[in-house]
Picture (tube, rainbow, N blue to C red):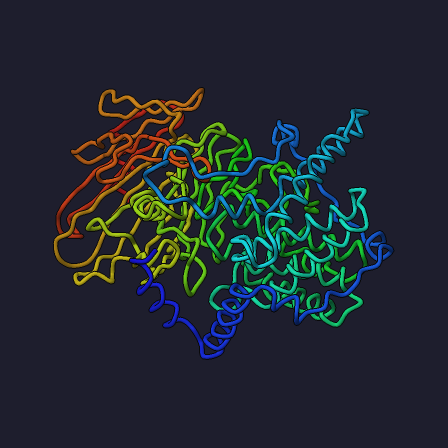
Length: 592
């Protein structure tokens, strides 16, 4: 992080308005004073009282339990730790520390206990474990005196846990006062350290949800009413900002899209059940967001790992708010294009699903959670991901792995001169963002033809533009043709990443890829064939992250070529049904 600091500061300052600089200065000064002398808060701030009647009168949002028992096999509130595979070779991941302090494992225990009680089983033990863990955390983490107050997003996500404890647990007067104080302290801190200006994003949404709940509880005080108004105003403002007109994510991350949608469904239900605000005008945009995720999900409801993911949940693993939409239904459309978020989805009934990414790098101005994946594709066959997005792995402590997983090499597209399509400033911030566009999407006599471009490499001294043609036929084959225009001599590298569970074998010039009852056959239609790379560390290539903090070796089919842009072409044939016919496919490819 120290090596990144000058670049980080320069980029932040370059994108900051005068108002943001003033805001940041006041925020940092306030935080430094409070961090050094937490007692200032208690000297200066009087915590209002909350009546028990007002808490009892408030309804907690409806929660859906999805495989809760599987997510709660233990009644222990274990803390998530950094992956053991990096022990001794990497810094501790602060993300793992912060996420355990969201206390969502306690929410999970509350609902597990309620589920047991409904089934006639004893639930008192689960409630005792949850209560003990909650108050132990409060004792171990005095306000402003622990690292768990550095990220106010985590404070926002803790407030629903405290609120739920007030509703569910049989507490002593002293315990209730402890929770009242904790909620007020969290709300007070969030209000002074909101993620604003260039930091607007999913953090802001989580913070505002906490602010609305805390403001509702302290509605008898002027501060509480101001928290509520401010949180609600920002939620209204951020809804069309975070969820684009086509329902896709501004942050170019499917995981964070799910997170943001669930936060909105949760707070909308809270507001409406308690008759605090009419959220009916939110619903169309939220439903669009759900439709977008449905469109990218395969027949097993799996989504590709597009963009960053830390496996965070709005509530807890196995729990979700009432989303106000039906269960997952496969879209009937064979082709769907999302112009604002930049994805085209091609569906072969319930058999195969292909996505092509022609969207922006992420959410300007810092593009924090986007990956450099312009024109990348993913392919699922029979509900099994075959050509995959490599995922995220970790945010902190392993800079070389962070660079790899968010970089272009880790995606099913082409790199030029071993560079990313944009410039990585830090583990989160990008510079020199590219522009990508879908040039055409049309039906031809051979199948659906897509053409897309991006300009990420026009920043080079000898600029190059990448153009990808994709021909998708109902018979069960795909042709992907990469072409380039520009100046100079360059090194071009095509990478196709496979799922770790897939077996790979070369036969008669084709690479046979099998995963259970799903299979693919791939080949390069030019003279050279693809080569197989597996779990390579120097340089890093051939890794897949199925969950945060986890990485696995996997297969990559690769081809490198050097030459002038107009002389280099990659034409890949992909078959997932029928018998491969190289000559016939070459004939189709010649039409592109």
